[in-house]
Picture 1: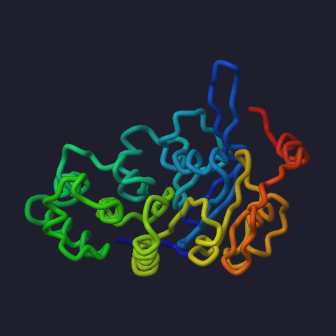
Picture 2: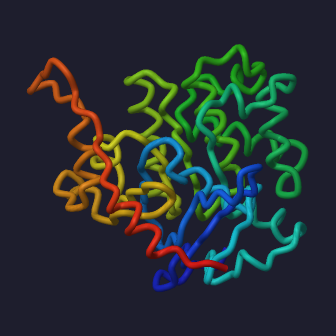
Picture 3: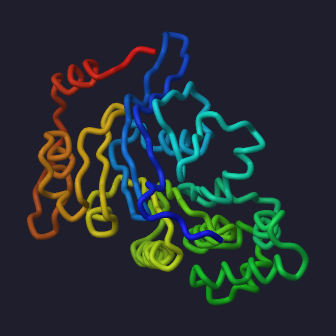
Length: 288
């Protein structure tokens, strides 16, 4: 495999817009989103409905809406002009995505091993495919990979199912992994284990990670950079370690709503939205 040029951004997004046709008109769910990333851990945070997951799906060519952009490039390749065959070569092989809850992503009528082998199709065959599948299960710290390989999805706990999903996505050694709320359904102990696995994979496999989350404290300690989204647009971009020193009032409002063990309060504050934010967004919208 040719070593990627470190000076070339892994992903370049300029003025990404996503629109949906609804019975009441056009819904503009992502507005002029622009960012670039290298082989790093990039977080996208914001409230439900802010456009985080839709942006990720657009990068994978899976958004059901109308997607437009001035630039949407992966390793210098224009994603906007790919046909179905070209997407199949890219999606799952060079860019993979781990969904939020494994019980909705894993096929309930296929054993875990069969689903792993399906991911090996075209790359490995026969005994080599099973060896690859077992190696990936071991890579995500599953102690008894043979048992998990033979198991049905309903026989696995949430944490084990999420690890199996990550293993499946890593079989092709993607250059970019998109993780959409991968730890929200897990308890604290398992969550830390999954995060440690993801962190180790980014470092050892030299890949990029887009980490979608609601947990501001988590991304401030786990990720390298943070994009804060509101109403489909990036409000603020900053280093993760400086997240608690954010300047935009929306980010400050989100942080103020977080509970603190050292400073218990009777009632947590709620986020107050400023109409000026909507004016700010509307002024930046480009009609196409």
